[in-house]
Length: 172
Image 1 (cartoon, rainbow, N blue to C red):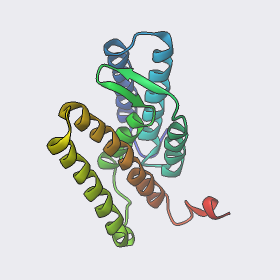
Image 2 (image 1 turned 90 degrees about the horizontal axis):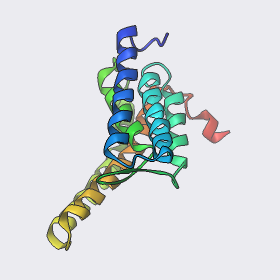
Image 3 (image 1 turned 60 degrees about the horizontal axis):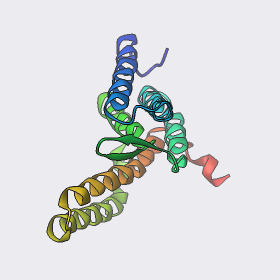
């Protein structure tokens, strides 16, 4: 059993992933190839949510694996969704709902990087509203870009939560 979640919380993670799989497949492209991508993506999202409290470095690895499958996308009614995007949402939900072991004092010095991303995303959204011929499409693309950019922050938070030795493998 995972040390971060109770049995009922683990069952809830599986139930939400199963329900999301059904909804994404029913409302999107109903082909079997799209179903396989939905199952893969939401299975990874459930694994990221389940592992985030107790094994955040493993959750980062799954998130990284999903991001590396960049040629594959899930067809939805509002556009194509990258495979790692459900895992990003699940990872943030898990970090918000689980007991925190994150030392914000250690990462406070990196706020200018986050501010720069925020300014970029704000300018992109403002440009979409003021200058785009198709505002809805442009804002939808801005949302997808923002969600993918937030995956970098989630990765950083997962590695920081994993402890000081979590990034030793990068330097080796």
